[in-house]
Length: 433
Image (cartoon, rainbow, N blue to C red; front, side, top):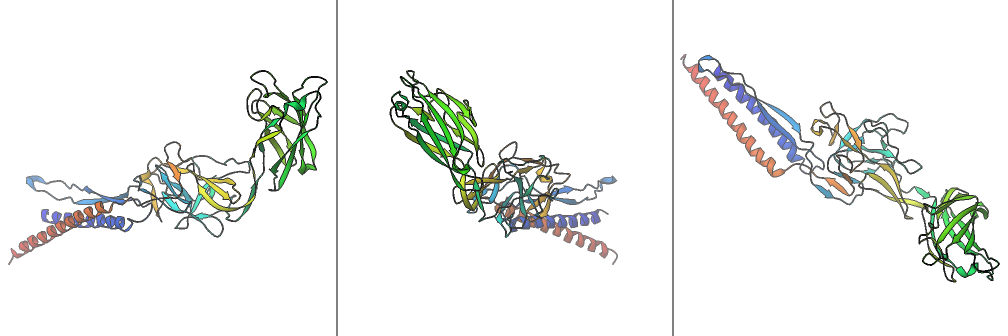
C-alpha cells in the first residue's frame, strides 16, 4: 500500500509539472503578444494521512492554474492614434458584433489594450475583429451616457473617414475702440460699420453687419451709441439693436457703463454678452462687462477693430481620429474643426483575476470577478486612456526560463521515483522465485 501510494503520488507529480510546463510554454510563446496576461500554475498537497504503526501513505499533489489579469505590462508608443492602452486599472469595452442603435445591450467583452482601425463600414475594430464600444455624443455636443452598471447605452464606435461636416457659429467675441469725438455735439453723426463672418447651420459663410451710430447731443458729449445688428442671411434686415453708454470718469474713461436692449435682443452684464436670433438660430456676441476692460471701448478719435474671434467652422473633410486621456474619440477635419463623437469608458470589476478568458486576449465578467462598472477614464479607481500606445505582454521571459528549469528538474525527480518504485516492486516479485 505504501509503495503503491508512492507510485500514485509520483504520477500525480508528473501530471502537475506537465501542467506547469504548459503554462510556461504559453507564457513564453506570448511574450510578444500585446496585452497578454501571464498564466500561473500553483501546486496543492493532497494529504491522505498516515496509518498506525508508523506507516505513511503518500497523498500526492494537484495543480491549480489561473491568470494574473491584474498584472500590467509596460506601455509602449506606436504610430497609430487609435492604438489604445490604459495607464492603470481597468479595461476597454468591446463586442464581437456591431448591432444597430436600436439594439438592446450588445455582448460585452473586455480587452486590456487594442490596435483599433476603421473597417470598410467605419467601425473601429482590433486585430481580432472586435469592435470598440463607447457612449455617443448627441447633436447638442453632450455625451449620451447611461447607467454605469449596464452596457445598454454603449454603441459601436463608428467614424466615416472622408465624410463632410461643419459647425455653426453660436458665439462671437469682439474687441474694438469707438472714437469718443464722434459723440460730440458738432460731430457728423455718421455710423461706423464692422462686418463679421459667421458659419450657418449648413456650413455656409454668412455675414453680420454691426452698425455703430453715435448719438450727438445739442451740447457737450453724449458718450452713447446705438448698435444695430444686421443679418445678411435674413436678407440684411436688422435683427437686434442696443444702446451702449460709456464712462467718462477719471480712471474709468472709455469703459462700458451700460448696454440696454432696444429691440430684438438681450444683454447679460455678468457674461458681457448680447444675445439675439439670426436666420439659423441663437447667436451671442461678447462686447464686455460694465466697468471692466476688454470688449468695446470709447477713446480718442479712432475707430479701431482690435480682435474678432468666433466658434464654428466651415465644411471640411474628416481626415483623422484621435483618443484623448478622458477616452473621448475626436474627429479631426481639414479645416481645423475638432468634434467629439464618442467617449470610451473604462470598465472595472472588483476582482480582475476572476474574469473569464474567452480568447483573442478578451475576457468576460464572471461570478468570481463581480459586476462591472463603467468609469470615465482617469476618474475613480481607473487609469487614463492613452492613444498612440499599447500595453506589452506581462511575461518576464527570464523568470519563465527559470521556472522551466525548476519544472524540468521536478519532472525528472518524479520520474526517478517512479523508476525506483518499479525496481522495488520487481524485487518484491522476485521473492517468490
